[in-house]
Image 1 (cartoon, helix red, strand yellow):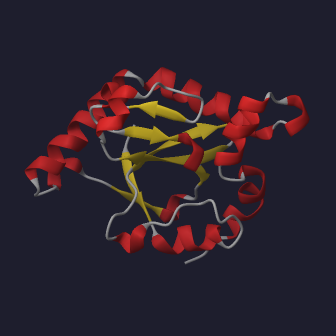
Image 2: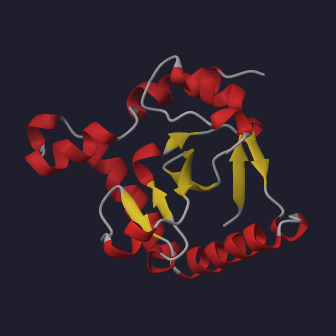
Length: 162
């Protein structure tokens, strides 16, 4: 798995169709995330930076801790379909900030060792999001309500041009 930033222009494009797509903070605090394939579409799943609360939280259908929460989390609820032209590869070895580079390396090692569970988590959440609310428990409806509207985003993401 490789790490990527995502272009502001792409985030802004998707936000026209779904306001739940979180802003990229004008590249001052850009997303870092991974790309997962579900079906024939690639999805970008952003990370959350490490917070003390992550250690106490448990993994859920839309949230997975990285390194037990020590290195942050993957926010599957913010997962979005992505085109390759919107991705900016992160070469971890070229990052000058030693502390940040160390965090990314630790995240990378943790994610590689947890790759199967991460892919499973993303697929399960995707399946939940695709279901009609009437088929879901109250808990599952709450999870779905926190997620980006993948049905809408899947219809438009390929229309993105820079």
